[in-house]
Structure formats: structure tokens, C-alpha cells
Length: 547
Image (tube, rainbow, N blue to C red; front, side, top):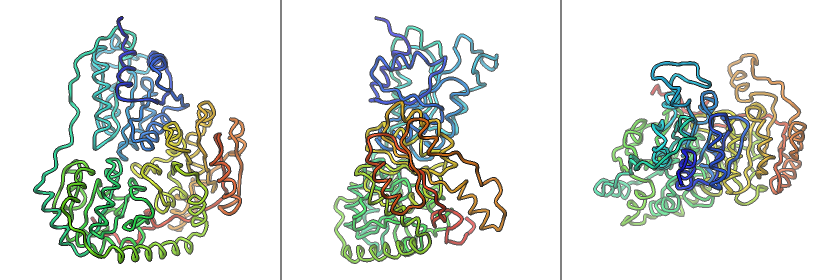
């Protein structure tokens, strides 16, 4: 029986293993909604296209699977750009599928005024995606979708855009041969691995710096064994939080932005970077000095060398390369001494946190002690989120999502919808009063879909981080103090159970335990003002070296 383009599209998603998609219906993409419904793929309907992009990102981060966002032509597609940029900066495998104007109405080089027409819709996505496609014919819908999905997933993973002319969805479609354009990860250079192994064996003070690529490749267990064999401390980037369990003897659990952990970098004679590009946010805009020797593990040699100069570059998958390094590497003494040192560092950092911001210490301990096992924590661009991104003890990989790729405010709440839909545990998102209002309409999605999400709104009456910046500069507060709604009343108007507490003390702990263990969506509003932590740029301790 002949198939339509929409049916071929649904078959391709099913072949990619897609079980859940997020999106907003429009006049041009309704056939997609029909075909996916018949194919048994769950469609989570959101209230804004940007939320679809963030939800697909949250799904990908929590599950490790392909996240899918479906939107309509023109303004619907354009509304996703902020979310797609965050996925790109954070390496999230997200597939953004948008319809385009019907091919029968399109005239090359001419904007005719067709409903939702853009001059070049695909070009909108080129700067913020790993690849961008426009389907050339109905017969090629399946092959383009398969290639796009695989491209998004292969390292370095990232978002991919696919535009489909709306009329192709109705037309009869065959199945053109697949092009096989997806790039493969290169084989590891065994001679380079041997040189790196020798450099590590001869190091007096090795340090491992693990990034998001290590986490996405599943390298945590092997990297932990490598660290123990080298008796080397492991520093993780924001994207790699949870790579090693909190009790691992080699884990320097706090961010490198605190001097106590920064000392590990300063004294290292060899740094092994795994799945990282040493970005500005982690290195205090490259104020950290070039190490005496560096080994970089990355699927892209240029990416590995763009910020610090590696002496040896090992091009390949983080897991495969780490396994090769571990092979025939003799164990070194000093593991107990390292564990004791890291325990002392941990004690000093915790004492610093309690002294600098007691409320932040209360928040962190409450999250650690009350959240249900397996919960996924999603932090927004807010002061409480910065404390969590830097100092929360993440129990396992993919249990923290933090938008320190692009740094997009308003990420957490819609991303929590995706994390919850992934079935990876209860999603608990922490956002500020300003960021929550970016997507507060998704309270309707939360209820309609029955998603297990607890939302913590830290209400400090505005943009707390920007207020701090102005205060530090001796400037009056301008544009940072906000009129906000009654968040409890707002949530309850959607049928969401909600309450309000003052600060992060006993009442917060009691309500958080109750709300995060509930079998329904919940919102907890906390009236509190926090001082930003050392991992925010206005508080970086290293002097600008002019790089």
C-alpha cells in the first residue's frame, strides 16, 4: 500500500529508536502528528516552541537518547533557536524538525509572502546546529531523517535541523537509498597512545580533567580505574558532573574555580584532558596557566587544541581511548595519600561555603538528604542554580542538567519536562523567579501529560545575579527588580500542588521531601536571596592574564 511522506517520516523516527517527541502543532505539520500517533510514538504537546527544544534537550541529557522537537514553519521554527543554541553548546543530540513552505509555492531567491515563509529557513539554523538539511523530495524523507538522527548522535553529538516542505507530507513517498553520510569516529593511533602512556607513567603529579565528552561516551568507570592506577585527582567540568560517584577516592568534587581545587591544576606536571575543550567558563577565561605537559583526548583534534596546547592529541572516542591508556599501565603508589588530601580539600571547601553563604550550604545539604534516589536535578541560570552546578554532589551520570553551554536563562523548567518524560527518575528543577516566567505556560503541559516534576522557584524579587553585578560595581539597581506573580496561586490555578516557604531551613526540607516524593507535579516557592558562588565570573579568583 502506498505511503505518504508523513508515514515515511514516522517510520524513520521509529527506526532511530525514538519513543517520545515534543512539539507544537501547526497548519503545516499536522500530518506529522497524525502519523506519529499511529506509529505509537508519544507526543508531548508544549505551549511554546522554545520549550519543545529545551524539553528535547532535557530528554537527551537524562536518557542519552535522541531528543526530538517538532515545530511548524517560519515563526514556529525560529522560536526554537535559543534552545537549539544551548543544545549545540552542550553537545546534546537533538533533532529539530520543522516544516517549510510547500515546494509548489517556493521560488528560489524570491520571498513571495506565503504564510510563514522565510527567506532561507535552513540558514537560520546553520550557526547553532551540527548540520542542517532540507528534504529535496518526498522519496528522500526517510533517508534524510535517518542520516540526520545518526549525525546528531555520533560524537561530537549535537543538534541537527531538518526542514520538510509541507506538501511532501501529504504526497505519496517511496524510499530512496540511504546516503551513508554520517561521519565515523576515527580509530585510535596506537603509537600516540603508547607515548601518552609513557608520559603518564613518568608524571610526578598527574591530573585528569574530564569533560562532557567523557560522560556522553560512558567512560566514567574506566576513567575512574585509570585515575586510581595513576593516583591522579579527577576534576570534572559542569557537563561531566556525576561522571564519578561522590565517594570515588580520586574525585575532586568541587569546582576548579575555588582555590583549594585550583591548586591541583597549578601543581600538575601532566594534565590529561578527556572529552573536553577547556572552555572559558571552566578555566576562568583561560586564566589558568598552560600545564608543563598536556595530553588531550577528543574526537576532534582542532577542538582539543583550540584553547590549550596539547603535547599529545589522542583522536577518538573517550571510552575507547581511556581503555587503551589503562592497558599495560602499571599502578602507582600514593592512592591513600591522594584520598586524604582530597578529603582535606573537601573539608576546607565546605567550611568556605558555610562561611560565605550559609543559606547555600543549607540548600545543598537539603538536596543531598531529601531528594528521592535516582532523581534528575535540572538547574537554571540563577544564583541557586550556580551553587548547584558547582557544588551539588551528583550521584551518577545524567543526574544533573545545567545550561552552562550557552548559558540560556529559562532552560530548567521546560528541560525538566523532557527529563521526566525520559523515565529516568523524578525531575527536580531549580529556577529563579525571572527564569521561571520564560516558560510558566508549561505548567499546563505538566498537568496535561502528568509528568513527575517538582519545581523549586527561588524568589529573590528579580535577577539576583545581575543585581549582584550592579551592587559590586557600586551602581544603583536598574532593570533587575521585577514584579512577579503569586507563584503559588499561579501553579494552583493550573491544578498543580504548590506551597511557599521562607529560606532553606527546616520548613524547606520538610516540604521538599514531601513534594519530591509525591506522585503528582508540585511547585515549591522559596523566598530567599543568595550571594553568588566562586564559579560565577564576577567572583573568579584568578587575575586576568590577558589571553
